[in-house]
Length: 145
Image 1: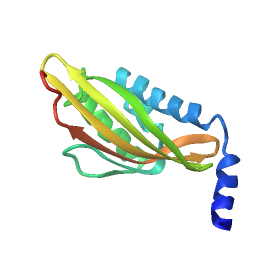
Image 2 (image 1 turned 90 degrees about the vertical axis):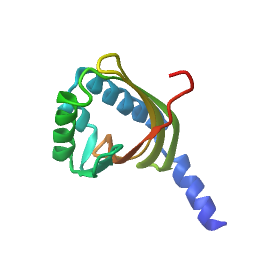
Image 3 (image 1 turned 180 degrees about the horizontal axis):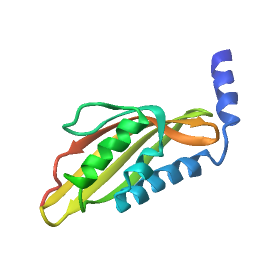
């Protein structure tokens, strides 16, 4: 009971603007992705972050994440339009959030039409929400695609 009360008080003291700030983090990622800006994408990750993308080995560290996206934007993701939607956002503590999101990837030539889901953990560090972990998964194609 005391633990539950303590947790309730901790979450009640969470920044009411956290939801908007976290959604802005995802919007910034989407804008950088649309520009093919690997540095802008990587800026949303903590220095010690790690990511796993479909059919790719884990990538650890902001510099490696930037290098990964530089390679992707020059090759497999060149000209790809990505839409991202935050499906569920949970503040675990006032400084840690878990976000479930969904995305689509589209390009006409060479054809790429895919959809997927991601799980990300963000942490509030020095006043900024940064991704510390991100896992993405491809979902089966929608009927008719």
